[in-house]
Length: 310
Image (cartoon, rainbow, N blue to C red; front, side, top):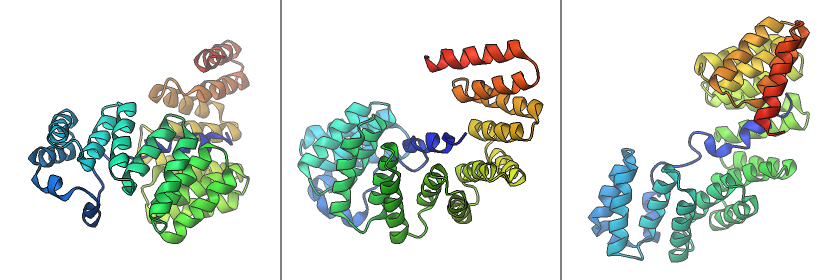
């Protein structure tokens, strides 16, 4: 169970807010962009509106026309890259971010979003370069340190990641995700009390932060405070009844209480929500074995091996 927190946060791109559905360029930063094109290109304006409404195909058509009218329209390439990402074309998104950066080497958002996609594709060293550049361009923006810290976490550089999350929090005391990520690393390093403090802060800032409740529950489980652990998992499930990890984590805690039937119920629900959640099959097999259901246990072990490609 100890690696489950880290396993979820390594996919930091999946977290809400880590990728922008629409352009996040602030008004004052538009000074960096081609002003005439930005003001006069009606296709760009209509594409931005469609993008805000989630009409990505329509936005793509308009950005294509805007770029045809002005092949050096840097922000049009950037926005089209965002659209491509939302349509699942990650490589195409990177190509457009490359074009944006070539046209405007000081445009920090291009480095930020290109770094995120590189990390998603497993190019962590490439992502690190982009986040380093983002920090170089704006050393007082907490965002750059946060994403670099998340990438260091992918690289298992836990101390380096903590340093970046510390810097993130120093620059922005309300950066919720930084507390959650830092707490997760403390959990991995065995600093359970420190982890609880960070998860507490994340929940204080956002009482509906589901991942923080689940992570804190897992930490309480390691501290043998199972009552608090169950309470946190219950809260996570109340906030999102389709969150498979909360059911799995609660099931693990129930196993520690020797409530094997209750654990199996939670594991069943986790598998119903996420049939490819390999660890759940392994734990459910162990619970079945404790109840004397050896055939059922073998079946689940086989399924874990099958789905894990072992």
